[in-house]
Length: 175
Image (cartoon, rainbow, N blue to C red):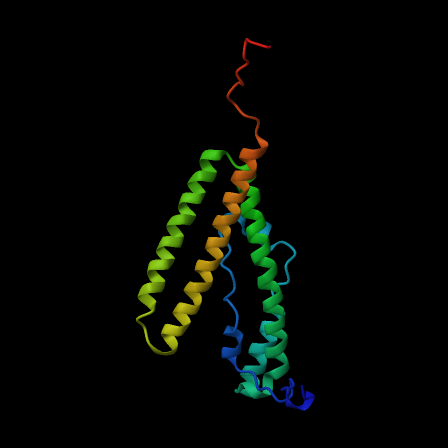
């Protein structure tokens, strides 16, 4: 492989749409936001610098460093947030009362169904607006499915850890 044939950062011009390469940032439910967001670099300072650069220079080619820094920070942040969301749902499945956990799982299942329907409807929208809607809905759908899976894993783990509530029958005959 020829090293010169590989594009370098200097040869690549980033634009705002390059920030939409991976999945969108996860949506954090309000009830677990404080726990999930604690200690995570939110990239707000880098984003502020990016907007300031765009305000001053008016076009993206003059803000390459800011775009690259923000993309890198956002990818790291989103990966960490997704992991924390899944961990939090698993812990909820383990610790909250079982009826509440079942209700939460039911709510997440309803949300998955709703997002799937909206994704089907968005498939009929053409152009960049259709792409953006499908991109956003697909990311939310994937995240919600993983949250549901994590919640169910926590609930199953709880079932395995709880001793059987039915008494074991002892046979009266020993030979």
